[in-house]
Image 1 (cartoon, protein in one colour):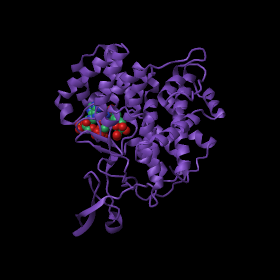
Image 2 (cartoon, helix red, strand yellow; image 1 turned 90 degrees about the vertical axis):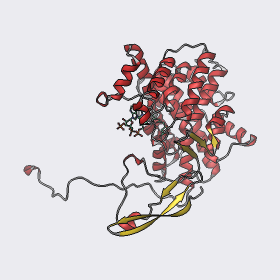
Image 3 (cartoon, protein in one colour; image 1 turned 45 degrees about the vertical axis):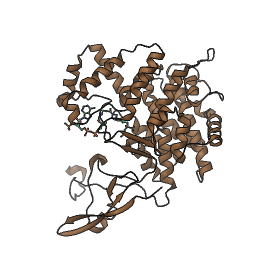
Length: 432
Ligand code: SDX
C-alpha cells in the first residue's frame, strides 16, 4: 500500500505553545493532518463523533469524491465497470488483488468459486436449528463465523488467502440461499458447477428438486450489476468494522461476520429494506408526496426519507443514478409494472425541489432504487440486506487483506473523552 506524500505542516497552538503537525496528501489530492504524534507531544486527543472528519487508515482500494459523485475501484470508475458489464467475479478480483484478472486468473478463480460453493455438510444442519422466521442477516453473520470452525483459515500467503477468499465469496451465496429455503420450508438446493456466480445464486434460491429455475439473461445481468455496484465503498460503517476486527488479527471469517452485523443496521445496509417499506406505507396509506415531504422536514415526526442522504456524497451517489436506470430497463424487459418505481421517482423529484434536502445536500443513495430491482427479481424483502452483504463481501475481503498485508499495522484502539463519575468508593449493600 502506498504511503501518502508529506506536503508541509499545520500549526496548532495549545497553551501558548505552537506545535507543528505533518500534512500529507493522497494520490487524488485529499489532504490530512497527521495526528499520530498529537497525544505524545501535547497530551491532547481529538474528538470527532461519528468520525466525520477522521481518516482511520490509508488505503489503495476504493476512492470516493463525494463532492463530484466519483466512485472508483482500484482507479476504475464504476460507470466503466457497469457499461463494460464487468462481472462481479472479476470485480472481486480487482478489489482483492488491485487489477482486473487476466484469462488464466479469471478461469482459476471461477473454478475455485465453483469448487467451493457447497457448504460443509454439517453446516447445512444449522439451518434446521434456526427459527424459520429468523432474520437472514443474523443467520448470515452466524454462519460466516461458523465457517471458521469448519475451515480454520490459516492465511499465510496469497495462495492460502485466495482459497479462503474464494470459499467465503462462494459460500455467502449458499448461506443466503439456504437461509431463504429454510424460511419457506423448501429443501436445500445444491450449487451447479456449470452456472455463473449470479445464476448459481438464483438457481439455489428459486429451483426446486422437481423444477429447475432458469433466470433470464436480463435478471442475471441486473443482479450482477447490483453486486458490482455494492462491492466496496471505502471506509463505510461495515468495512471499518471489518478493518477494526482484522486489526486484532482475527481471522477473515470472524471479521466479515462482524461486517454483516454492522451492515444490518437501518442507517446502513438495512436501508434498502426500509425504502421499500416506506414506499409501501405511502402507497397503502395514500399519503400525498407533499405530506411525506412535510413529515420528513418536521423533526418531531422522526420520519427520515430512507434511501436519501450520505455522509460522503454531497452531490449525488453515482450508484443511485445507475441503479435507477437499471430498474427502468429491468422492469421494461420483464414487462413488470411496479407502482413503487414511479412513486420513488415522484418522491425523488419532490425532495430535490425542496430546500430542506438541497440545503442539507440530501440526494438518493445506493439504497433508494436498489430494492425495486430486487423486488422485480422475486427476492423477498427480508433478503434485501443479505444481497447487499453478498455484494459487499469482496470489499470486506480486500480491506481485511490490506490490514493484514501491512507489516506496520497497529490494533485499532480509539481514545475517548470521559464524562462519567469522578473517583468513587465501593459501598456495602446495606448502605446503598
Ligand atoms: C449506505 O457510508 C457509506 O458509504 C454507506 C453506503 C455503502 O455503500 O457502504 O453508501 C451504504 O449505508 C447508504 C446510506 C443508507 N441509509 C439511509 O438511506 C438512511 C437514511 N439516511 C440517513 O440516516 C443519513 O443520511 C445517513 C445515515 C446516510 C448519513 O447520516 P449523517 O452523515 O450522520 O448525516 P446527519 O444525520 O448528520 O444529517 C445531516 C442533516 C440532519 O438535519 P439537521 O440536523 O442538519 O437539521 O440531514 C438530515 C439530518 O436530520 N438528514 C435527513 C436524512 N439524512 C440526513 N433528513 C431526512 N431524511 C434523511 N434520510
